[in-house]
Image (cartoon, rainbow, N blue to C red; front, side, top):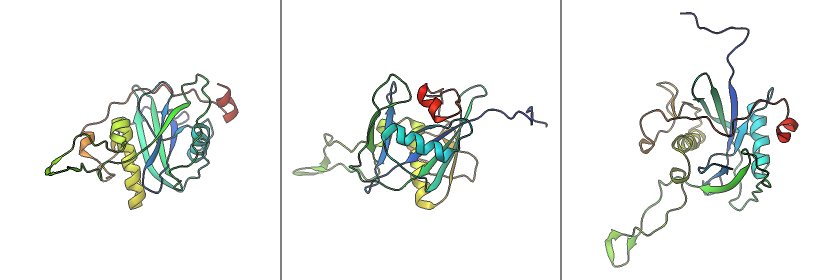
Length: 220
């Protein structure tokens, strides 16, 4: 069956690029955008004519003041936001940084693209409650576990982070679509705690109109 697509005018697709920034303990640096409550990997949308690696470098520098370079493509994910809207997301590995690296958030100016907060998050697989003193079979419920991706990220963002870490470990690109493996043999990490069905994706408030340069993007 012929696809209803004009070969001279292919369908529009937004490009979003993020960085998996880890410290020596494997914690992941995440940011919270102004007006949002959940955390995500630092990054943003590419301008018209800009490649994903360059967009990742620029947005990370603008959001948290760190200069990073892509080392390896870890995740390619298509996100459908309803109707014909489609975003392809790229997640890149970068060189690990110190946990006390200087993260500089931008001065608030009312834009919803700015990073309002950052946080180092862990995967919680290694978290274990400690026995209560004198009661070796009883475990304390008062122990505070380290901040983890499942507590502070959306379901789909947590899955993307886990897939990126797995891809970096195995050297195998993770291919996702709406938070799940894109096809049967694309088998990135998948945690059953994140659910077995497609994630519900909604349009993000950060989604900007395409601009022709970074100068124009800064001016908006």
